[in-house]
Amino acid sequence: MQTPPPPPPPPRTPARGKLQLRIAPNAATNDAATQSFDPNPPSGNYRVRWRGKITDEMPISLILRKTENGELGMLTQIEVNARWLTIRDFLAGHEQSEKERIATANREAEVEKERIATANREAEVERARRKEEAVRDAAEKKRLADENAAELARQHELEIERARAPIAAQQGTAFCRFCGNQILVTAAMCMKCGSPIGNHNSAATRKSRTVYVLLALFFGPLGIHNFYAEYYGRGAAQLLICIFFGWLILPILILWIWNLFEIFAVKQDPNGNPFN
Image (cartoon, rainbow, N blue to C red):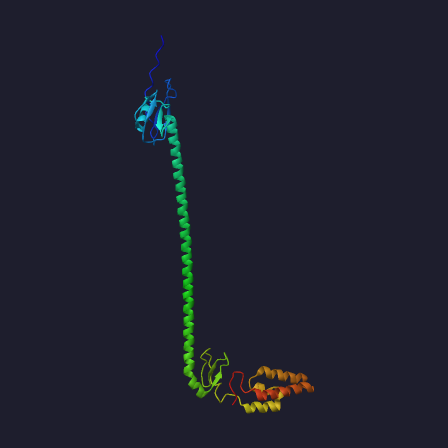
């Protein structure tokens, strides 16, 4: 007499976070094993074909519960899209699909992070560009303000010159000995450089043309007339030529020609003040 097979062991308690399913690899045997699946099982209603019988549609949760309780084996077939697959293949495909879904979600998250990083970089570039434009605008405004101030100062000087023109026409003008600016003969200081003028432009302090001509006629080769008119460079040159080459006829002749030219050409001192 054949000994009956031992009763199947009681179902184990599912581990926390995993779905424990009992696997019957062969419908003809009672060997049992345990396999873990993703805790996010698929959904929907499916028909089951078990031992030649096809059941009505039932929820996948009920199919998995029957599989866990041992009522159905992992080789039990279910109908998916008009195809019959074993529960093991169906769950493996679902697990692969879930992994692909997670991988796709991770890729999309990486793409979103890259998009956000690119947007942040573009925002930084835009902020730097706006800051640079602000600096350029401030520099341009300062330049325009300086130009306006310079133009106002020039207009003010022109107004002063126009106001002084009638007085200058009556009193006469001269040139500042320090900066060469045209000033009134009776001015006490230069309006441009601020140097004190004193009375060097007055008629009493100006050089006499008569004295200049007489000195040039009698002492021309010595350059005394140029020293008198404050042309010190010319006077020194003429004096040195006379000292070193005065015993020669040609240098003396050149000096006299030079003196004659100065008698007719020179009519003011180096500061531009005319002779009396």
